[in-house]
Structure formats: C-alpha cells, structure tokens
Image (cartoon, rainbow, N blue to C red; front, side, top):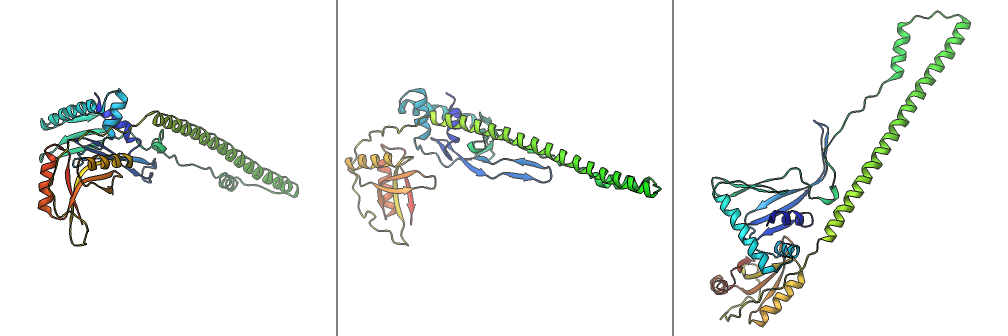
Length: 319
C-alpha cells in the first residue's frame, strides 16, 4: 500500500502523525544555522523524531489514506494494521525498515526501535526549495595603497613646470581610482540585486506549489464506529479533584477535531455511560472519557469490562 507516502504528506501540515499500533512520527522546527568554521548557512527545517509509546489511533492517518484511495475507514484500517504487522515482523527479524522520505528504523539489542531521519527532506513549508549555502568571502583590492607603494619605488625630479604636471597627474590618478571603485561597487550591487530577485521569485513559486498541494489534499472526519451497549455498575465516581487525590479516567478516544469529540460524547450517553470531555492533550487532540473514578481498583475493574468490547480503551490518571 505504501503507507509511508501518506505519512510523508501529513508531516508537511501536522507536527504529529500516529501510526496505529506502531508509534508516532513527530516534527519540531529548528532555526537557521550559520556555521562560522565552514562559512555554511543552513535554512530553518523541521526535525523528525519517532516515539514508540504513542500507538493509539487518532484517525488522522487512516482517514487521509481512506479518502485518497476512495474506500471506507474500516477497510483502510484493516490495510494499515496488515502493513504495520509486516513492519514489526521485519524489525523482529533484525532487518532495517526504510520509509521513503521519512527515514530508517531498526531495533537495538534491548528490542527498542531506533530511528534515523532522512536528511535530504525538509518538511517546513516556509523553507521549501532552500538548501545549504556556502558563503564566499569578498576580496577587495586596496587600489590606493598599491598606487602609494608604486610611487615610493619610482623616483621623481620636480621642476616648477614638472611639479604642476605631476600634481595634475596625481589628481587624475586618484580620480581614476575613485571611478574604478564606484564602477566595481555599482556592478556588484546590480549583480546582488538581480540574484536576490531571482531567489525571491523561486521561493514564491515554490511556496505557491506547496500551498496548492496542501489545499488540494482534503481531510474528512471519519464516521464514528457504533459501539455495543454495555452496562456497568459503578460507584464513587469522581465528583471533585482534591489536590492530593488522583482522578482515573477511562479514555474513549482522542480526536483531531472538537466536533468528533462531541459526537463521541453523545454516543456514549445513549449507551448508558457518563462521558466527559477532558480538554486537549500536549499534541492538541481532544480527549473523551467513558467514565472517571477516584478509586484506582474500581477504575481498573471498569476498564477490564470495557476492553472486552473496546480494545482501544485505556486508563489515564491525573491529579
């Protein structure tokens, strides 16, 4: 299926792209750098990293891939799970997994996944088309010093007439030096101005191409799955959050858009739950809980009951 192509497309627009059951690719912007030793300028970039702990399905990748292939969300989810299974199998065999335009993954001796990002791809759209530049130092000829040095080496015998002619030649000589310097500076300024205009046009054209590509990519909200109705006997639900007491939330999902989170809450209410909107997590995803408890044992019992039908449910404890 080539799942990495969809991941690569989304990394231009989002800072976090989760691959269900595998991990998440994260991007962080890095400022421009000027290496004074090598006189090399590096433009701003987005640095890619990989987090093996983020394995939940936020729906972003599956929705985008399903829309691109014109199939249902469920069919695409099955294809994603199949390809992720092949990735894991190759890594377990000690093979290196190369994802085009993203990077290379492998497992170390402790069984943890290592990641080396692709160095030739910059996912920061504002730097599209820009590459590293080696700066060339400007060498200026000090013409006045050369003329003075030349005069010291050539003896002159001055008569009143010769002194006047010499003075005239002296002024003409310096006038020629000034004219040459002005001509050189003007030509250099014209070249620099032309070069800047060319680079500006190239950047504007590249930015237009990227903007057009992103605008053509359509994202849609996947229709929420119908969850089976279950009945739980719960007690001592969390009604307050003292500073010294933890609240245990059973998470039903994390959504890119608030409208999807609200739809999920309405579904859960119809099924007999007491759902709650928990706000956004550090990745900007809207979180919804089935139930919330102050007692850890009751929260675990409820979690086990829910996971019989909803495998993606998980427990989040906060103060």
